[in-house]
Amino acid sequence: MNVNFYATLRQIAGRKTVELPLRDGATVHELLAAVIARFPEMEGQLLDEGGQLYPHVHVFINGQDAPHLEHALDTKLRKEDAVDLFPAVGGG
Image (cartoon, rainbow, N blue to C red; front, side, top):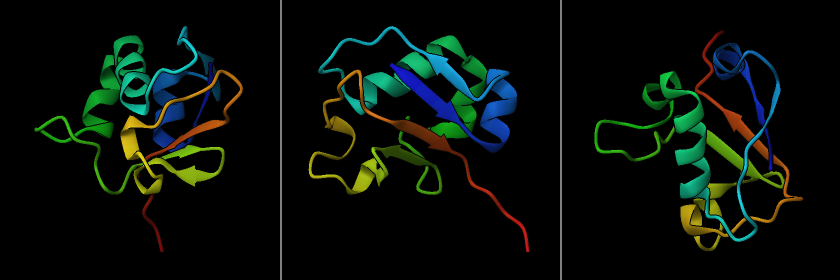
């Protein structure tokens, strides 16, 4: 499954798109675990001390923010899904 990274996450990954070996039916939780396994430095960027996704981090699945999907982070993914990870971005 291809995952697109943005902003500081892209800097950690070293490129925009990374292919992760996830099966059809893997959940968003499993996707995040695979990202962190590949890039341990991202854990503090994505998850709080309790292991929950920070509210300011966006995991878009086919253009929809995963926490707002019907099954939230338990949403099952398909290999052809478009996955985009955005960290908090500030500025003004």
